[in-house]
Amino acid sequence: MPRGIVLLAGAFAVYVVGLYLYRLSPLHPLAKFPGPKLAAVTSWYEAYYEIVLSGQYSKKISQLHDQYGPIIRVTPHELHIRDSRFFDEVYSKNLQVDKEGWDKRFGSEHSVLTTVNAAFHKRRRAALNPMFSRRSILSFIHIIYRHIDTLSTRMQEFEARKEPLNLTLAFPALTGDIIMDYFFGFNYAQLKDPEFASFHDAFMKIGATGHLATQFPLIFPIMNSIPHFITEWLQPAAKPLLKFKRDQWDLIGRTLRGDEIKRNDAQKTIFQEILNSKLPLEDKSHQRLADEAQIVVGGGVETTAFALTIAVFHIINTPRIYERLHADLVSAFPNRATLELIPLEQMPYLKACIMEAVRLSYGLSARNPRTHDKPIQYKQYVIPAKTTIAMTIPEVSHDEDIFPNSREFIPERWLDDPKTKDGVPLDRFMVSFGRGTRSCLGITLAWTELYLTLGMMFRRFQFEIFEADKSDVEMGHDFFIPVTRLDSKGVRVFVTSTHD
Ligand code: HEM
Image (cartoon, rainbow, N blue to C red):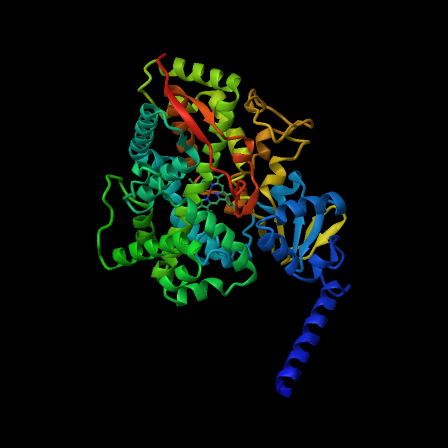
C-alpha cells in the first residue's frame, strides 16, 4: 500500500480515537449525563438499533430509561427525557426553538416540518396557517363529504361481493385523496382504485430510509443525482418513494410554468395560498415548494389513516364500544344516509373514541428534537444551551401513571372531564399532535376526517374482523411514523349494512 495512504489512514484513526475520548471526557458538555458509554461515543449505537434492527431505538431508549433514569444521553450530541410532566417545557408555546436532525431524513429539508431554524420555520408556517383554520376546512368540507361517500360506496361493494375489505389500505387512499384535493386541487382517485393503490408504500419506505439518511446524509443528494431508473434497478423497493417524489416535483414544475392543475371546485388550494403568500422568492423556488408538498401531503396521509385503523379495529373488536357508539349515532341521525359534522362533534362518546385512537396512534413515533437558546434546568441537571433535547410521544401515551392500562383502548377514560391522580386535566397529556410552536398544523383537518369517517362507518355498517389481531394495529417499528409488524396483512373486515 502506498505510504501516503497508510499515513492518511493512521491520521484518521488517531482523529477518531481522539474524538471518541473527548466525547467521554469531562470536557464534553454532556459528559455528566447518564447513559451507555457506547451511545455517548458514537452514533453507530443508534444506527445499529435503527438500521440493523429496523426502527428499534425508541424501544431500546425506553429500556435505558428504566436503567439510567429520566434523562439520558442517547447519541454523542443528544439527550432524551422521559417525563410526561416536562413535555410542555421542551415543546414550549412561548419560545421559538430550532429542530436539528429532521432536515436530513427525507430529502426535503426546506419544508415546514423539517426546517431547522426557528425564524425560517415561523415564516413558512405563517404562510400555511390560513389554510388550516376551521373556516378554511369548512369551506372545503363538501369535498371531504364526497370522499367519505366514495368510501361508503366501496364498503357496499365489498359487502355485495362478500369479500374482506382491507382498511389498512383503504384509509391512506381516503386521506391521500383528501389532502391531494386540498393541496393541489385534484386527486388520484386512490379510493376508487380496486386495490386502494395509495402513497402508503412510499411513506413506509420514506420512514425507513430516514434512519439510513440520518447516518448517511448524502443518500438523498446521491439518489437525486443519478437517474431514477438506475436507483430503481439497484433498489426496486425504492420505486414508490421515487415515484412519489417525482410526481410532486413534476406537479410543481407544471404549475410554475403556468399550467392549471387544479380541477376540483375547492375555493382555493394550499399550493395557491403558498404562491400568493408574502413568503420571499427563495421560499417559492421549485425545490422549496416540492419539499413542502411532499411533507404536507405526507403529514396528511399516514397519521390520520393509522388513527382511523386503530379506532376501527378496537371499536369492532369490543362489542360494548360498538353498541354504544352505534346507538348514539342512530339517535343523532335517524336517517342512516345523513351525516353532518356539527352533531358528530357534539357526541361525547365518539369524541372519546377518537381521543383514545389518537393517543394510541402517536402521530409520530420518532424522537422529536428541540434546541433551546438558553440552558434548561431539569431536576438536578442544567442542560447546556444549544443541546439537542428530545422526547417521544409514545412514552407519554404509555405513561401508566397517567393512562393506566395504557395499551388498552378505553374510550371511557376521556369521559366526564377526567383528571390525573393529582388533579391535572387528562387532555394535557394528549400529545399526539405535538405541542408548542411546531405542533401539528393539520389538527382541525384530522379531527374533521376522523369524525366524518367514523360517524359514517359506525352509523351505516357493522363489521366482522377477518384474520387480524392487536398486532396489526400496534407499533412494531418506529419508522418516524409508527409501523406495525412488517408481515401484517392489515386490518381486514367483512362489511354488513345496518338497517336501523
Ligand atoms: C391524527 C392525525 C395527525 C396526528 C396525530 C399528527 C401529528 C403531528 C405531529 C406529532 C407533528 C409534529 C409536531 C412537532 O414537530 O412537534 C405534526 C406536524 C405537522 N402535521 Fe400533523 N398530525 C396529524 C394529521 C395531520 C394532517 C391531516 C395534516 C394535514 C396536512 C398534518 C400536517 C402537519 C404539518 C404540516 C406539520 C408540521 C407543522 C410544523 O412543523 O409547524 N397533520 N403532526
